[in-house]
Length: 301
Ligand code: SF4
Ligand code: SF4
Image: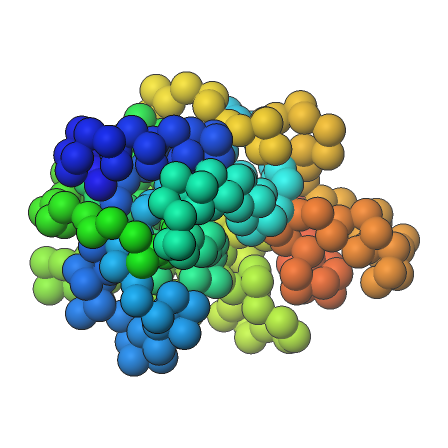
């Protein structure tokens, strides 16, 4: 069932259906190959969704729109990828149900019980970097992954998982040492990661505020992605919903603007973005921390 593998007929039929989603790359992996890597909770969720799950079609949706400045992570600047990926995979599922009558095809994105990065790597679509990110061949780490869980045609064997070159540029660039080398191995500590900290609710500790200042971002962090050689020389292949300059593409958020609206106004304005799910307050908090940093730098001059 993989591109270039399995029976031609199945591959072509799946390929035609997946092409309707606009995915930049796709592949397949047997569900059984993922089972050893899933928690019992994830497994029971997946089996609840598709009781006779046999295969997973993995699709990568590019969002690289060029490196531009801004205090919002690049993944959250265009339309909310959860909605976009599910909608696009839905088109493919409809076509697949026609191609394989009586079989189930369920689209899954982000809150999926499936280990998406691993599935993509096992499907031969790219590399898992030391930074823990998945780098899709031809599109770098700037892809949203989505999966279709199915009880249809079995897939060919999973591919050997490929690792990155191990240059450690991501480790050196990480502003908070969330990525660091311990006993010869790169470890990732989510508690120190700017991306995770900017998404926390409530008050931050002094240490966490320091991480926000070090990252310089109101939402998310792209530092380790920008540092990675695998992300150099990429084409701006973003899908329409994620293109820079497309209606609504946002590079930065502004403190005064957020303070000037209530929660209802915030959701009216921003509910179509991936940063909106936490609401207005964490963004205001992060921007205040960054404004304080700016003010203290200015007073030092
Ligand atoms: S920066 Fe180097 S070590 Fe880090 S993910 Fe990229 S290739 Fe791997
Ligand atoms: S996202 Fe930022 S803080 Fe998190 S590991 Fe990468 S560089 Fe470090």
